[in-house]
Amino acid sequence: MTYDTVITSKGTITIAAPLRKAMGLKTGQKIKLSINPSNQIVLDSGTDMKSFEALRAEITKKIPNHLKGLSGDSLREAAASAWVDGHHA
Image 1 (tube, rainbow, N blue to C red):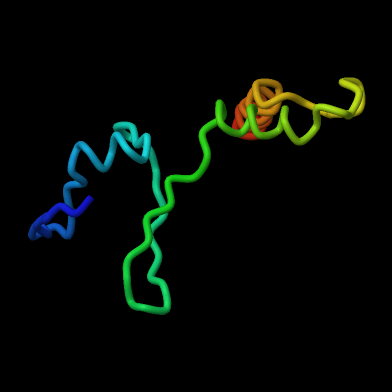
Image 2: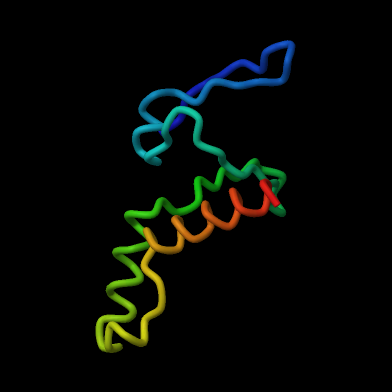
């Protein structure tokens, strides 16, 4: 897929809807941009929690549950709690 876009005076660009859909990009999502050795811009959308959990389940399927550590939801809750506690100390 190839789409043309324009850089605005504020330096923003629009990513065409078919590209956003193909990459699973959502409004407000943060992405990383980098330049590869060929001087091309590379967009990294990271991994969403659902994909992470599926991959983690596949990798750890032979490990007993009590040895796996926190689930993605538990990690997210712990991080949110730590952030809130840290800002109200």
